[in-house]
Structure formats: C-alpha cells, structure tokens
Image (tube, rainbow, N blue to C red; front, top):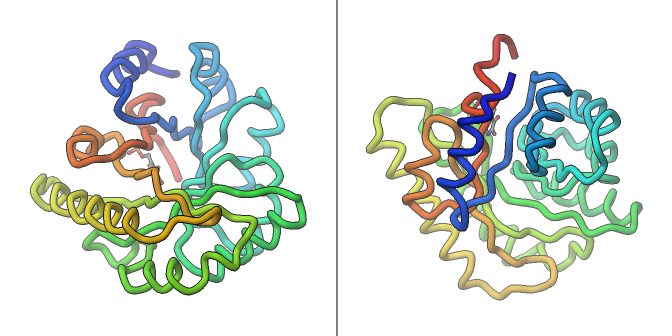
Length: 222
Ligand SMILES: *Cc1c(COP(=O)(O)O)cnc(C)c1O
C-alpha cells in the first residue's frame, strides 16, 4: 500500500529542490502502478532480476533508476532501458556499462558512488579513486555520461555524523564541477538522502533523493 498523503506532502515539500526517486524494491507492481497513477515517473530498484520483471509489467515511460550494487555480468540486461545508474563504484563497472551502451547504440547516464559512511560494508569510491577516473579515463568512454555523484550516509541516530557526511559529499561534488566538463562528464546531480535523512540531505545540497519506506511502508524482508 502506498501512502498517498505522504507522497503529496513529499512532492510539495521537495518541489523545485530535488527529484524524488521512489524506491520500490521488494514492493509489488500494483504499488508502483498506484504511484504512477498519481503522476510519478521516477522509480528506483536494487536488484536486476526484480527490475526486469517490473519493467516488463509496467508502463514504458517510467524512468527506472538502478540504485543497488551492480555486477558487471548483469549490466547488459538493464542497459536497453535504464534511465540512470546511481551506484557506479569502479572504473571496471563504468567500462562495462560503456561497452554495453555502445552495443545498444546508447549513451547511459551514471552517477559515481562515493563511500562517505563509517561502515565498511557500504560500497563506493574514495576521493583519489574518483579523481583518477575523472582525470584519466572518462573521456575515452564515449557511451557513458557521468552526470553526478551518489552517496549513502552511515546508519546511525547521530545526526551530526550524518550531516558531516553529507557536507563532505557536497564539497566533493562542488569540486568535481570545477573539473573540465565534456560529453562524458557533466556533473549536475547529487543523489543523497533516504527516508530517514532526506531533510538533512536537502539542507546540505542534495538535488535527488531516494525514498522507499516513507512512501511504500516498511520492507519486511530483503
Ligand atoms: C533501499 C534504498 C533506499 C531507500 O531506503 P528507505 O530508507 O526505504 O528510504 C535508498 N537508497 C538505496 C541505495 C537503497 O538501497
């Protein structure tokens, strides 16, 4: 079940500030359709198999965002229709996306995922790896466009910790904007903030939030 009131509230709260990606992982097609019927078009999924079956079943003008950890051997399945890949955390993965994009005669938009949390388990690049990719490799990849950064804050009740992580990511994002842009590198999107921390993220400069449980209710299983 979707929470229509929450949805309308969120949309008006974030209007002109941030794109809302509705994170529908583990939720049924009917929930996505319900939000679609209210006019929503941006949806995020974490698992390739689940995304493929939902994409098949749902209207074709949905903008699908892949927000999970993407394995290189699965890139080929989503490239034909994906709108934005948020979690690009290695050059190896970016190259594979570029290769599959070329095969499909497409340009795929991607965000580089930065590791900003305390937890070791979260994926992402550090600043050196980011600049290495941007400065030395990106212009050889003609079928991808890196159009910003994504990050996930620590899972904690320590608000100052979360704030500092978002401030740090915003600073890195601003630094990337000073680097030379090209058809392969046009940083404009900062994807940060989830159900529990999106207000902090917006305050710290996010312009794209990924909201799941607030809209669709808690997930039982993963
Ligand atoms: C699941 C997930 C979200 C949404 O989480 P909620 O707390 O339910 O809003 C956002 N981003 C990523 C990368 C996720 O995996």
